Image (cartoon, rainbow, N blue to C red; front, side, top):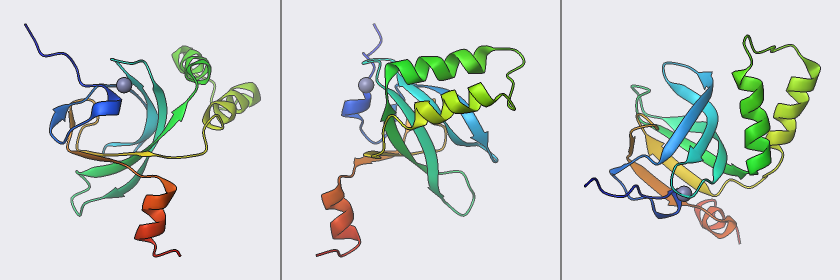
Amino acid sequence: MSKPDICCQNLAAGCRSPFEVTMIGWYDGVTSGMARCRVCGRTYFFDMLAWDDEHEMRVYGFREISQRSYESFMAIQSRSPPDAESHDDLLAVRDALATSMECLLYVAATDLTRRIDGFSLLTFASWAELLRLR
Ligand SMILES: [Zn+2]
């Protein structure tokens, strides 16, 4: 029997990725996209924040978005061909991304669909410490 997948809420460095990924941006690898946790079903928009000198190890910020936003985005993506110029589509994407402002989950990976190399949950308190706010 195979091991149960680890949920996005219980990531560990070196664990198998629980994410189904839909790419939005690409530069030698994924730079942004949508992700869905196969275990709990949480849905996210993610964006690349940093990379190593080889552009292989990348750090992504994950913002949780509503199930509804995720599904409306996926419906647009699955249309062939997707109409990038459609005003309604652009509005739907904007609305999907606006459902969450805060980025709490940070993930490092060379391939987000395969393996999680590192992760952290950063709250405002974490940022305040990092940026030496008082
Ligand atoms: Zn999960």
